Length: 446
Ligand SMILES: Cc1cc2nc3c(=O)[nH]c(=O)nc-3n(C[C@H](O)[C@H](O)[C@H](O)COP(=O)(O)OP(=O)(O)OC[C@H]3O[C@@H](n4cnc5c(N)ncnc54)[C@H](O)[C@@H]3O)c2cc1C
Image (cartoon, rainbow, N blue to C red; front, top):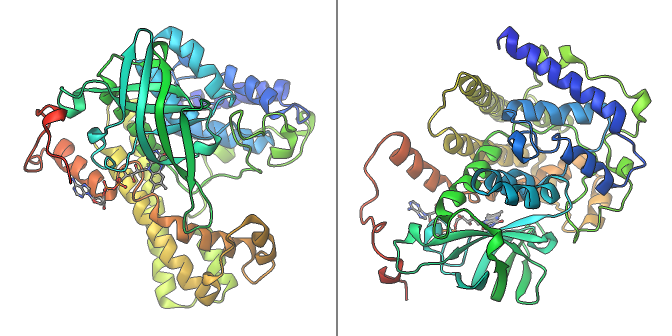
């Protein structure tokens, strides 16, 4: 890191700290706090400056999140509104759409879900059949979506719909921001093996979306969809191990957290005046804890630190986690020089998938039979936390059950490899390329 970058980062954290001193008040409601944070550009600082952001790199944005947590203030809203939807609108929307749609997203007033996948269109997303037909200034949408994460808490949806069935499949799709609160949108939660219902199937039966909420040109939604997916993949690949967070509040009007007290969601209940300043030396110079730290402590607690197979996997977890962090830092350094690393979002996601699988196997190996105990509802979680291994063991089993998710969503491992092969390495495309055939003439199953 150059001296100039260090100074810029220090200035940024100084500015943030001064702002937090003046603005953080645990007695605000969640909605009031997120209003302040979002409109000042601290909730989604990677967005461009004309879109309620600060044009920061992912690394600097993560430093902002950590500094807010260290200060003891409540974190910015999380989720697709900030991570996927806002960057897509910022890239493909008009300034009028940016000013109308992004403020409610970055202030957590509105939660978005992602209405991309369908029963017959997942990896082959461009094969989607949900259609939108225009009638004046309104589009009428009919079809089915599935695996819609957080749909039951969403106010709005990022919708991909087919608007020209006679164009080749990638060229007849349009991206919309659709209101989920209409009777013609039917949301049905799907229960997973974790015991939770994170995702849903969604039926749209003549649902309406105004043309003013069309992001990008008609039939050019594939470009916007790729922006959404790029942010989804690079967000996943950049996850290192997570920073300290308090109880999480959900964004959006449906979840019902906006009127709650912000201080109850802060990592430590401190008043602004007594909060310490972020320690810059801590941010810049201290070596990060091992990404395997949590697993090392779990192994110690279960007396497995001498087990040679566990030790080997702990070292693997350390190496892969360190590789993920170094890849993010290297990408950041290259981008700060105006360059890029082709395929980095794809292979970072592949690396993250390997880490998740390794942690699943390692965690289960450490826990042994204890790993079979899982709290299928939140009440049981409290009781199980009093057993050996405590909350860490509960979380380890929960994460192991959820480990199948990351290698699938945002594009499966196989699809990431295809993308790296074709676009980064220049390998020939898969045989039977139908990308030029009109969608309506493509062979269909059944
Ligand atoms: C936890 C979770 C959350 C999700 N959240 C959302 C959401 O919020 N919104 C949303 O729209 N979607 C969501 N999804 C859906 C996700 O994007 C799809 O599951 C994913 O794209 C894969 O599609 P599919 O399930 O239809 O599998 P398929 O596409 O049917 O794939 C089945 C298998 O075939 C392999 N395969 C398919 N095509 C190829 C190929 N060309 N080459 C090699 N192998 C191939 C795949 O890798 C996979 O192993 C979520 C999924 C999960 C697991």
